[in-house]
Length: 124
Image (tube, rainbow, N blue to C red; front, side):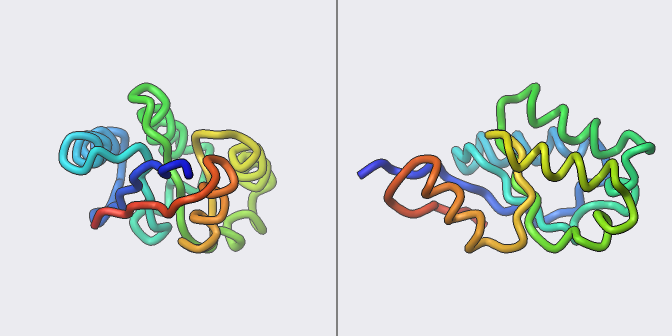
């Protein structure tokens, strides 16, 4: 049985790329996490308007620091008003490093199918 990587759930609002770096450091150094679970309600409204660049800046920090990111929660309202955002969500979910999932159960299922067996260790 393969052990699943540790996931850390963010508890603070991530308004920009500087806050993303702080979150990555906390997840990695304090919790030895490979994944950060970031609830939708901890993201600023500008994250969902791709033209602002906030989403790209935040996501890029996770790529730069080789930390996986799962945005957890319902983003359908944002997908409904932005074709670009809807396309980004679809493309991200086809990848391995950034996922948009509606809930923790879906995250666990995707992680289990990717790594096989075990259960995710979620820090708080």
